[in-house]
Length: 369
Image 1 (tube, helix red, strand yellow):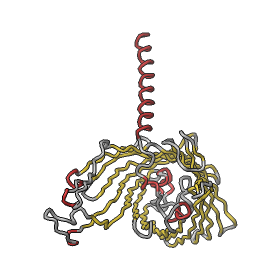
Image 2 (cartoon, rainbow, N blue to C red):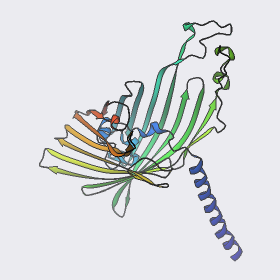
Image 3 (tube, one colour):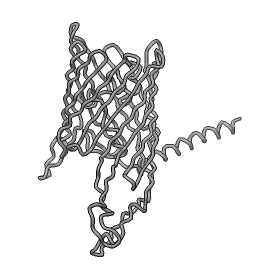
Image 4 (cartoon, helix red, strand yellow):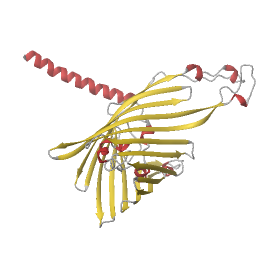
């Protein structure tokens, strides 16, 4: 019995060390930015608040993205949400759709679809045939797009007479680059939500299992025939040796406070912290092993029908051409109207404040029934 206990003790230690080694190896091998289209955000309400929506989200299907544990607050029993946005002067298109349904008094299920793609990319590899004939009729177009399908389940449980909401997302990722390459991936998110008076607290852990994309390449489509280069030069599109892409876990910690002013006016403020450990990033708190990116959002409402919103996120330190450092932050603003179960939201997000892109106009609509 003593031998068995000793063996079991060391077995647990070995398994723990193996798990830590696997995590450190994955962290070293994983790219810093993977499946970034899943970090853009959904819903004009949340985006107008700078993405601060993991502690208190709108009681609609968008909650499944920000924190599935917010779904038990769904009102009424069913909700459908749609969003369309265009980035970089319409070059990239971002679409989102979700449906949530109450299963019973404490359980809610939801399904989510996301697509981020660039369409009508000109393909010129067939511009010249093997006889050296040049023709624009041989031009074609292809798309590169990222897709995500997620199923969410959330439940309200009671611990010591206190209500705690928990939820999880199981997601499938499909990434496609025309006929040249494609990848499939699978991952899991989990979240928790706790309310204490006027305070709300949320925790969202994304990709807790790590999300692994496995790529396949069409070597024939990537090959460029020698006759395409009349000068005799050769161009080779090599197929990467590593066919896996790993998305490491990230965490969002959020707290929100809501207050009412009389019968008609209310205000909500939320702060969130995105925590990553995949290497140094250009965020407000940046180290070699830990990064913290804050979000701040506020919303003022009148009779729960008209909503004004503002938010700050994407704080960075940027080097100018003269190598001087300056601090930048992305401002966001939005407005929303809710009536008879419908919610129409608009957000103006200034991604141009930290890059070369212009302002983005985002619209979303949801309906509860």
